[in-house]
Length: 441
Image 1 (cartoon, rainbow, N blue to C red):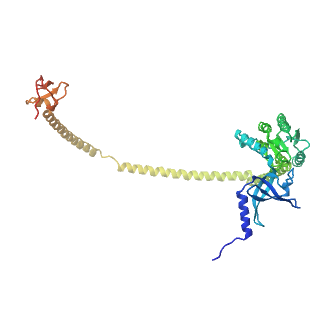
Image 2 (image 1 turned 90 degrees about the vertical axis):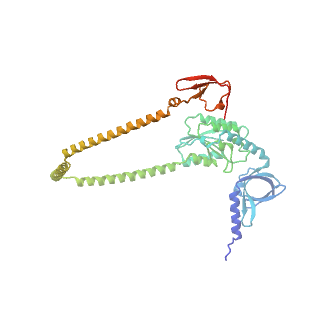
Image 3 (image 1 turned 180 degrees about the horizontal axis):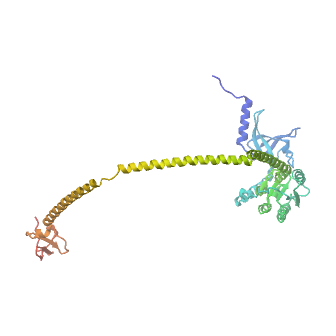
């Protein structure tokens, strides 16, 4: 009997897949220890608290996005994916983002405002506005010095050079930034020629992006007449503005690609495809009509041929008419013969019918006499029965009946008491008296 088994690498691979599937991206808090910065640019360290620790790694493409350098012993909050380093079978965390633990207060403010706006329905998908199919003029709310502006301008120049860009300059970081961003959005909404609005900023820490987590900016986006694409930070950065906006883009460049979709090249490709389809359709129609014209020309006859054809048709119809007339005449002849034979077979015998009528009348008279005699006998019998049952006839034989004062007939002496008034009914009258005493048997 063979026994199935797994290799160690297969087992580690399955455990790694289970961890990645069942433990989602989450935030943890701990203290950095055993920090090593490898020559490859990756960071290897442990995250620990007073009861446990776990190995962690932050790859170069992630740690290069940090605007600060963590040190041994720093308390941090990290966004991590749980997994298994299959080569050694070590459980470890892959760090996607990191911030000092002191930023926990800002994150709590972020979550509080997010929950509040979600309850108001500001994130509902049913309220999101759709982008127009063909965009000609858009507004951009960002800093004039932002690298994100240059990325967006370059992307649009490549993908959709026909789109006109209108810049609404504003600060994107600092205490004065939220009010300026909200004012820029409101100013852009006053321009009736704009088709959409981009709100963009490059990546940074939670503090750097905080202007886009303020309620004044969220309110300006929610009240915007124009559809807004929000492209703030990098793929892992999420702000309140992203949730309120009609469309969230992972980066400013992605926002430019969304507003220019389909691109000019896509439009040209579609036009060329439609032109090719139309050309093939016209060629197919032309070929069909040419074939139809050839068929019609083959059916075209000379006047002599047409006259001969009509003569043949007329002769054919005349022959059919003769056959039809002969057939109908024969049908009517057969029907007439059958009707004559039927009349002969069903001719009535008047003498026999008169004899039968006389005989039936005599029989009817006899039956009526017998029925009348039976009815007279029944009536006489009913009279005798009614006479025998007539109570007046019973009284004439010396009987009487007694009524109480209320008029009811007395059937039992026990129902009477001394002093009760009674009336005794005879055949020729009645006597009214009073009960002296009652005797019962």
